[in-house]
Length: 201
Image (cartoon, rainbow, N blue to C red):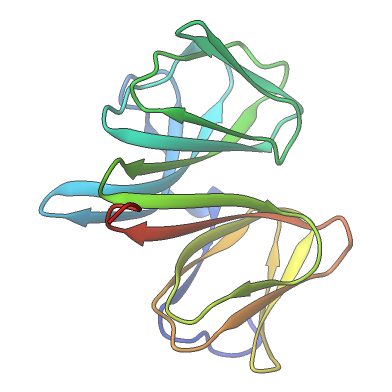
């Protein structure tokens, strides 16, 4: 539900309304949420990956990856002598795009919030927010998704819209600070902030 017009630079999305595309290796489906490119190269990308059966993950050389379980009771990835376990929605794992990983068949369909940032060119900070108000600073580039409960987006004391589970925002270079207030104590979201350029520059 939208209450007032959104500020410039704020786009609302619903995951299930985004087009589903096959994974590069054909082993699953993904929905692109947002992407930043320069000169034909991807600096960063956010997507939601649906996993219903066992299968390999695509390699993305040169990318740093972060994944958060946003749907499903449990998911396990294995490979390269490593095991990454997502015990419940909100669990987060970081790994390199060069790792050879495959998903163990989940007991129920699972969905991952999938973040990639090109190493040395972009930085992604992914956090799961479970309590209190989240403030988005003016000028930041952020992508967020509510995966449990509801949040109300406000600016300067004005209520702008209400986000349900499965809905989110792509926020880029807004002139105003924004606030997200949870409707319930158990409301949860995943928040990703991006910075272009090497973090060591």
